[in-house]
Length: 191
Image (cartoon, rainbow, N blue to C red; front, side):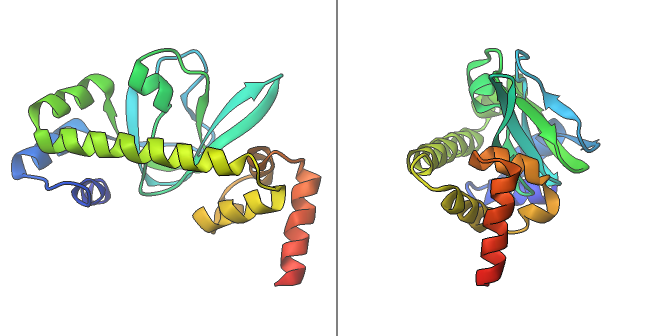
């Protein structure tokens, strides 16, 4: 819970009353590797804070599994579209390692927003941060080569190859596993 409180307090001041509400509202869970927090067509009713482990989001396109993002410790995650709109999800959320998470329901999240102006500010900053990141990332990402995409991923998540299946990484950067292997070999020979 300390990591969750630290992340929130890095954005807003947390009063004792708000801290007590956060502690009493967020639910701690340990989730096994390869479990689904969400599947396509389900409604995403929870926002998650990843305290330990790695998670990926993905969807299917033409019966092919496409990884859309990886999350690691210290990050909030959800199906952003489904959580904010309370409409059915088009994606899956899957644990890639055993994970320790703290989660809050959509209803409880909205209640904290209404009761605590500082939490409302935190929620707004979180939404702004996610929107800005996705906007910035998506606009540059589509024009990158596979090598540039791989390098960017490593700059954001340096130990990803030790924690994530290479097939998921290949899917994320839009190449075959063979192409990813060639990119990785070239990178090692230049190092």
